[in-house]
Amino acid sequence: MRLHVSDDGRRFVAPDGTPFFWLADTAWNVALRGDTPDWERYLDVRRRQGFTVIQFVCSPWRGCRSPRHGRIFEQAFGTVRYDERAFEKMSEWISMIVEHDMTPAPVLLWDNNPDDPFFDWSEETCIDAGRRMVERWSRYDPVWILAGDGDYRSARRVDRWKRIGREVFAGTTLPATMHPCGCTWVGDLFASEPWYSFVGIQSGHGSVDHDLGFLLAGPYATRWTEIEKPFINMEPNYETAYSFGERVLFTDYHVRRAAYWSLFGAPIAGLTYGNNDIWVWAQQANERAEGHDDIWVAGHWEAGLETPGIESLGVMMRILRRIGWSRLFPAGHLLSDQPGWTDPNKFIGCAASLDLSTVVAYLPKGGEIGFVGDVVRNGGRSYWVDPVTGAWADAGVFGDRAAFAPDERDWLFVVESSDVGQSKSVRAENT
Image 1 (cartoon, rainbow, N blue to C red):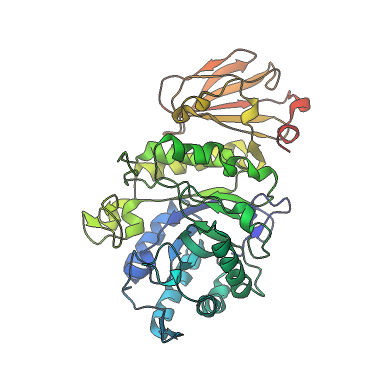
Image 2: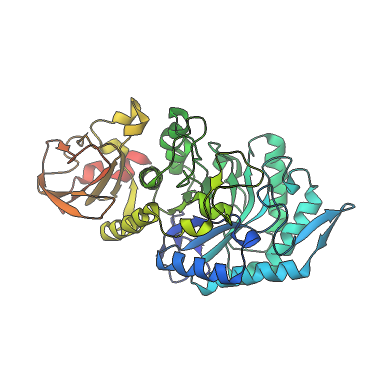
């Protein structure tokens, strides 16, 4: 299915204009280390779980230097040499994604450090390889990720990738973006490029205040008012991975927290999930990812198929459909108090419809929530929603009082009302 950006620039839509929720799985190595029977099983499960996009690497990179089916291309004596059999196998994988009613999102040219081939390839060579992939796979209507996991903020690198993108995507209207490294922002640097269709970030794998602050108070949460494109967190905390520095094991709680923070930080377009076992596509337990340190020790890939984090995402989708996710915009200004400014771990994410008929907030550590003035007028019905089970509990008519979560774990608070304060609409405060 060919995706388009909505008329207001905020979200993806299907060809008939129906809102499309980007729920992607991070499958970097699946195409490079897997084969047809395993691909079939993996895609069957992910489609059943409601995923709509698969992100993957299609060329050699430091995480898989010797792909199972060969290198689709490599540089030799200043020219690119192509392996047609490897190309055909990659095409088989991409076609299988489409057959499972999901959208392929290949990273064409992974460019993180000198261990990755494209880090020091000439622009001409990158363009040649990129064009070949675009020509071969455009018929599958993918979403293109031009380059992956690099720091693209220097003027030299920005100019380099702008030029490459213009040449690689000349003549195509399929959506495309960049996938920058963790806690870096390139949205303003590429926003004016004709091929740059949506803003991708990587909030990454840190757990300290600085890393949380990048997602909660950085440009992802502020620049959406000026850059009218979909915003997607394409790499939040991976379930079953350990955080940098502190070595905190990321669980389903961290998956939920990153998901709701990401969705409520910008107009809701979607997000990406990641699992340590899946992206590595580990062939055995306790397998260390090639080219990575000991944070990235994974279990067998099958262990990442059914997890508590994925169950939480299924619950999340049911909740979002019920409250009308495509109508929601960030609405942190509606809160009477934001405990996250003191402790990022307690940051309350908040979103609302433009007419304020629906207001939803995510409380990662329970506690108290209240709204300013008459934003939620008397008569607004409120609910505590369990993000683990999806159970709704009626919290009564919401007036000027504060509400207190049932306990100190994470909760959603939803207020629905037909009697709304039009004078304090979301758009008026955020544009």
